[in-house]
Length: 437
Image (cartoon, rainbow, N blue to C red; front, top):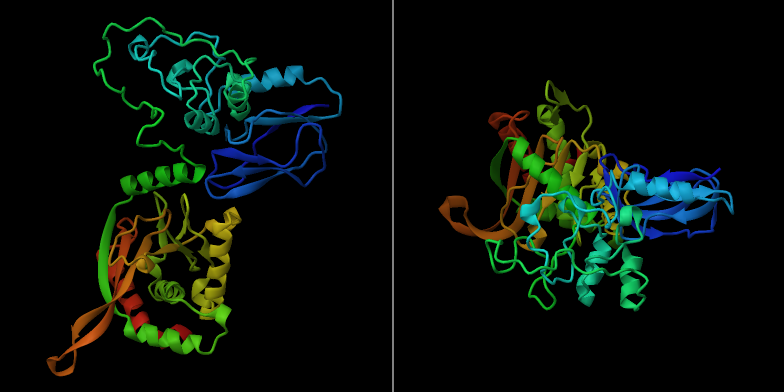
């Protein structure tokens, strides 16, 4: 019997996803455990695995569309089944939870917030027609419309709830006029109700404009939401210390002389290991705020910020305090490689008890990082700089210094506790032989 297939939860914090690619098409037979699609979540691109057996009778979502968690994306059943009723059900269900869908197709009149209806006659490549004031078009269809200078106002989309998807825009480009490109709803010239006669607020860019509005990826949306939440709700304070990096560099050179080319240890690997050991020695700082309690973590899991093209992720080295430097370095190489290929699993990006963010390789002297909840601390690492320092007998000699800034959640870590943690970290980096203990 035919049934709807909903978008599953592919990461712990997932609320919606972008259907990046269909691996199966309408009419294909599928077996339990087969990957039918690739979904861009807030963490990474994940495989959508189907647990049922049957034939994909209908794909309800186009590639590039954003879909709410649990919303119908396909219909599976036996070959030849009539799915008309399920398609209607899916369109009715999809219009409510979808973030950009409205309650009805474009033929239904929009509710009456009349003050906002005045800017209708503006001729822009991406329209602003939608029930409830939101436009029924996928991010990918908007992007293609901007590139080709198309006005989508009045186009009846073939997606759920009348939403315009990629195939509709491609049909317009190809000259297929079966898509009814109706005229703009309010064609009467506005007398001057708009207070601003120039470009209206939040209007998309016109063709040939000197800027481009890029739709947010799922990762960028999540970064924006989580960082605003963290900065708004977590009481940050910052501690900065300067570390003598010369012993650290000597230690790294000696260690790498014993290792093969592909197994060498970076400065960042040593900092991650030292951070984990410092947290073990100052365990009160290895904690999270729960609202009505402080959770003291018995194990040390260090998240490491990895930069991607459209954001960053924080893969986690578990039990970093109990692993040798070569093991930590190997895990970090593997995690970073898989992160950039968007192949990390949700488990590999969650569960940290502290985080390290290193911008030293970009020449940044000093910065303060935003805490990654529920961690109690995050360490920001600057570049190693050659500077004049006071040596023996007050002589001025060349030294190498590195700035370390610890961002602390004041609900968990007080000033004195944060200072103890940072002092322990500096001690480990200036006497790196202790990392082997």
